[in-house]
Length: 318
Ligand code: AVI
Image (tube, rainbow, N blue to C red; front, side):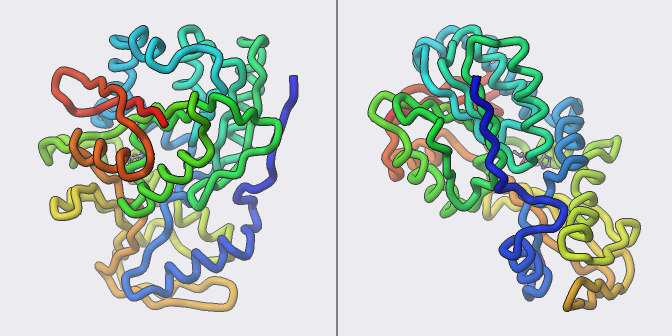
């Protein structure tokens, strides 16, 4: 069994590219930090905890769709593919597909190297007939798979509505990019969060226990490590809301008081109430996702949803 790990993750000392990206965001007129920086080791664990919250409906709704329509989904995807799990995290979602989709090869790709390597190491014990690879990579700007990943019949698996964390133009570019890495026999299985009543969205991104707030605030600690900044987490508050015009939930961090933040080689003064934009989570309709797939070279094959149509699992072919 081959073990492949590409050292292209965000280590304690960030790559120059990541540092430049962070500093540009902090200096911008409307400051921002890319959501990919939410996922250091603690951030990945906090996200796992979010997925268990009663308010965070996407995970359990998607899981219910998979258990209700699992056989039909497996029938559509076929067996024996190379399953490429994008943003694999703890690999639990893909592992649930193994008994029905029966991949010949499994490739878990995640930005959090420690997390994905540990998860794949555990899975190897349970499914020793599947050739498994852990790839630590920030694939937001393009996926680079090692040569050990078979090119034939790749089934790209992108669950959990992570596509929604891209801007629509980035999501289109990403889907088009995946299409170029998929031969005529492959496919794409994605989870997509659908537009719904605002109250449900508000609760999902601002839970009563404050786990989402901790997840959002933890980005500041990660940034401190990456660029030597001195963000004091207690000086910032989590804010989230549904932006109907852009059909997305936005997460921000708002300064509780005026504060000067310093990092290696720079600084910025934030006034009380000023915020740093940390995440967009775009919501789709059946129509907008079908349109996006069609424009990026995919043919929509099937859509499965829950009875309330809160979430959709979509299968597309080249
Ligand atoms: C990973 N991603 C799909 C989550 C979402 O819902 O956009 C991240 C998240 N942010 C806050 N809660 C969960």
